[in-house]
Length: 198
Length: 297
Image (cartoon, chains in turn brown, yellow):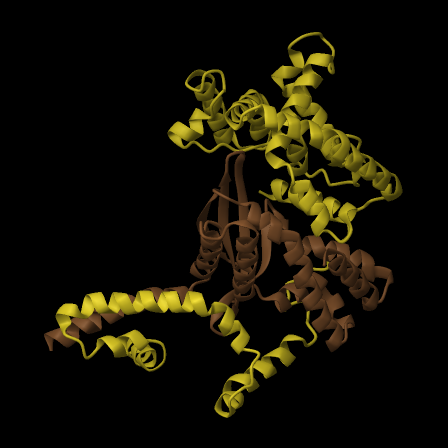
């Protein structure tokens, strides 16, 4: 009886962190950012080959961390409804590639900065803002993540750096294009942008 | 009750190491549990790429009925129309930009100035001047701008922060040896509050007006342009030599401050440009968001 109780307690203790990680938005985002930092700081991944592996690993985490569909919807705003289903799917894919191209270098350039997670703020029943600060030699950069509740975890749909929201910034740019052009024009612009890099 | 349910479901689904550990002697249980757990961690690390591949493989029948169908339903649902409530969008008004044509010209000019003059100078400077020294310059320039922060905090009805900024200035000027170190923060953990006159005007209800791009100085608007001029008069460096507002010394110091600052941020403008679909609009929107946030705070 004593034996089994001890095992039971052990198991209980080991379960707790898993349970917490799966639940609170704060911990989910913190854990994802933590694994990003772990990959970036991995001493085994050096040189060009290491860079490739790093990129792949980062993409796996990014796919887990972000909800690209939600991100796309909020970026397009009500313009989303002007897109056909196929166009929506293509947009999500293209936009994901634009973001990846734009930010992978920046993220890879981060080395020994410290990231402190400060607090979470509830925005609505299903959305939270998780606040963090990146401490760099030249000062502190506040980075806030907005996450939405999904079936069994929390997914990020916006990143706010020093008060500038990523999705708002793109929304302004896309609105300019969609103001007097059909969705196809925007898709073509994105295709060109993504193609240029490959 | 929930805990028990959770544990049961956990036993069934997610805890292979428990099944493994259960029949073993208690004395060894600790170590074995840990071993298996670390093995699990290793496995999951190694398997990550394969796991993602797995998702694209043929589905088994029992999987297809449960996992896949719900996934497909999700997908179809995810791509359906949205309402503004769902995505939390308030159709905001665009920013006034009556001189867009001219502004784009100046934006282009500033872009060239950055790549041809600003960036090479900052890179050379970064190469020559060690990081520690550049950090000291940063602290010095930050400290000497204390009057700007103190007065604007006061004007914004935040006397507490004005006092904190005054305290910071006194500590950094003495213990921080004339502002060469941000001792207030490093030694005592004192956090100040940045404040400028454009922000003060904003708090008084002065609106954004319209967007302008100033040569060399970059994005602005009438309110923040006036704010910048007022803050210029509050900078002690303005008064170091002649009685002119803009002379060689004060402007020279300002340029050095900016080069020193840029040496820490080389590559950031490039990222903004690269990430943007239309860099001019991206920059404009970033500026609007940034200033609006500062005023709301």
